[in-house]
Image (tube, rainbow, N blue to C red; front, side, top):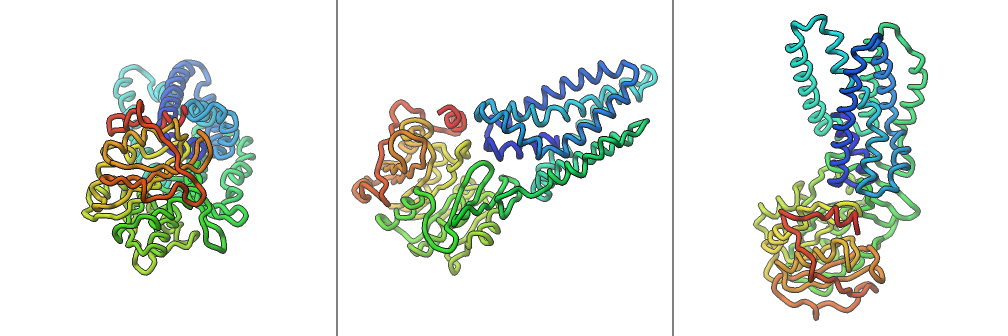
Length: 448
């Protein structure tokens, strides 16, 4: 289970943390366990089974320790298959071999420990119970302690060394030859990646800060989420040029809510340039110190307050009314938090807007297909007026800024272009609105 949890986080760096990835990882693990159980039971009845098993266990331990290296090969071979089938291939290439060997343990240990059939029922029950309890401990330990505290490279190294130790302890004839490669493997696996000045795993993301020329980027899993110029002010991403100018055309009220902290640039702009008092709803506590240390984020003299809470939960519990709500939680090219894209969510947004408040949001989609038309259809359930600004010509996948008002027609309040980017038409007729019961945003992204 440690491999399953850590493996899913490793694959999310490349494929995004999608439902397809989790379905692939769980299915591949279950299929591999089944094959391992079957092969282990077959092997257990043959002479020399224990020696063969411990040798395979030794190789499995070395494979696990080398996982960060093997991942690169697996991703190279599987990425052409896309975000639906790519995770299946990647998981099978990277994690099936060691899981296959580990699955052989139960039938082989049962055969070795049971000298007659009198106690086989009790012994088999104990082994399965022990295995299940260990799986629970591995799942909770990996998700709540190992990934946030140690990081993926260290987890694979520790797990691999533990498996190697078990293999050596069980060998009747010790075989240390293969261990000669282990120091090199561990060095390569634990060596810091190139290009990142900061890299860590949080409970929600693999976080990297990357400098490229005069730009510093914040990367969350597979997506470049935020950016700033090094040494001078200005917006790096086109969509931010649009979004950060919205209050200059329409500003009602003095309180704003930013859904998602990122590098903190949007919240600072609202506070410094437009004198908003800003609340930020951010689910990942690891992002705040990164924003402060690497992107110069601060509270602008007490004008910004960061709430470490899921945005939907925050909106449900808050009594504040906001003149502006800015949602930048949909910037993933592979996945978005679907529960922040449904009619029920936007109903909560509307409740928290003041009488003349605005919703401003960034989405990545084609204007005519993808998730943008579904967003439009969804928003029309709760908002009267919507304007869309596109950052590219034509129907290409791009950042789209939407501006919505629940009761007023705001089309006359905004120019045809903002920062050189014009309005665009996003259809809604014939597109089903997202709801809590139906929001296949990841499938639409992957197939559009």
